[in-house]
Length: 161
Length: 152
Image 1 (spheres, rainbow over the protein chains, first blue to last red):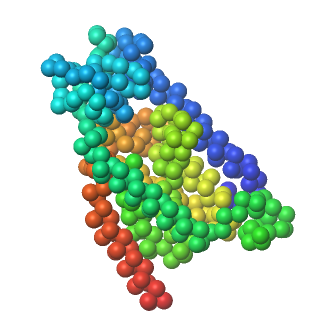
Image 2 (cartoon, helix red, strand yellow):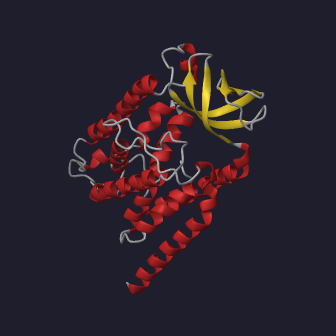
Image 3 (cartoon, each protein chain N blue to C red):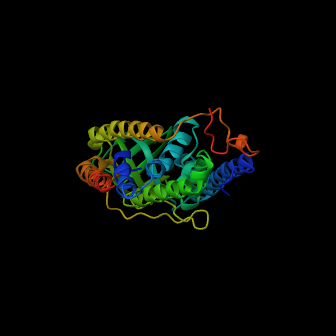
């Protein structure tokens, strides 16, 4: 399993299985957790579906609810919440076919978290750079050295340049 | 995802107990792999959320770790795989702490079960406030390593 024998096949199999898992998840996800656009296209089919909407932008707000745009799909959300036009929010809700609309369960305003969010991204980039540098202290990155070269009595450890 | 600083801190502590520094480095990079792969799929290949979901499952992490371990020289590969896998599992464990508004942060047992899990302890948008705790953890890891070097 961990030898150099049939190296390319093992690598291909692992990546292929990972890709198949992604395809399976994609297909299953379409039928169990559709995006807003799909719900709006077939409202009756997706009645009662729980939704978690990332990147929603409030386009209108009034006393009874508000409207959101999620990557070009627009819908109404009820009941009203403390949001204003232009707010970016994360939203969890339930899709209702009669309207159609989304029944709000919970939401978060992204602006309230804007600064820590940016800090978090900057910190993550710095940390990743540091970890990759540390990895390069211990391992040489030599794409030209293919592991299968070592199978036939050559250089199994890939220590030769 | 929790921020990578939090993931680093969560992996550095167990890595401090690993004698071989190369394996320790793999354990730390292992904890980054689920996010590196999922963000790569999302930002570079423009894959959907559903497609990248397996990157944060136990089976997905095992496959990614195995593929990554093949990049390591043969004699280190078995231990390297264990370290990468441990890092990935730590990553999922940290992500489970998040509050994803009830929708779950990881489908742990996918493809055997589609159920999502979350403990709902941390707002993912506020993870930066964990920084002081992370610094303490990193300091503890550094102290452990230093003590071990002195003993050797």
